[in-house]
Length: 117
Length: 117
Image (cartoon, rainbow over all chains, first blue to last red):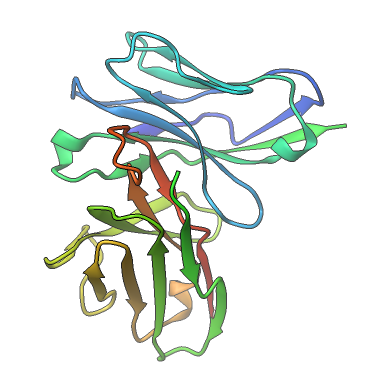
């Protein structure tokens, strides 16, 4: 079974609008971490935001926030006030340190976000 | 966050040859990870490299094909041996909690874009 599911291959958003990128995950661990990364066409993976499974507050980093719904096993990324530079691939990832014995990140298939001027 | 650099940033290689990719971090880290991203795909972990011990390889990756060195706490190399066109990918190194601040964040280097002809 897929550990991370991103059901939106592509998304469009108008500049200055907010957009939500969906991510659901599958784990039997109680302790895990959820990540979002941005990958522009240059190929680098840019860390955006992290949410620990025991964190009660939703993580926020500037214009990025993570809508963490533990019971639904979802960790959606919300980007507010979209900018043209936000156009990129976005990957959701999960780390299960105790399950795998190593801190491996499992990645989703990604969502390509295009910001329209 | 730490600064992670990789060399080379890109290369075009002939089949049957080998390429060594370097990853340098500006702070000491316990674990370094090597990932592969094939064209249009998500990231897959190749191996985990701890200083002073043999790298741990994931299923589908073997040491003869992807030998790894980890001579100290700030540096690692990944060699792609006897290359074939199927090895054309972006190779990324990654480190966890580079500032040893107790956070669980994980960062990636800028990647090495390899094309095998």
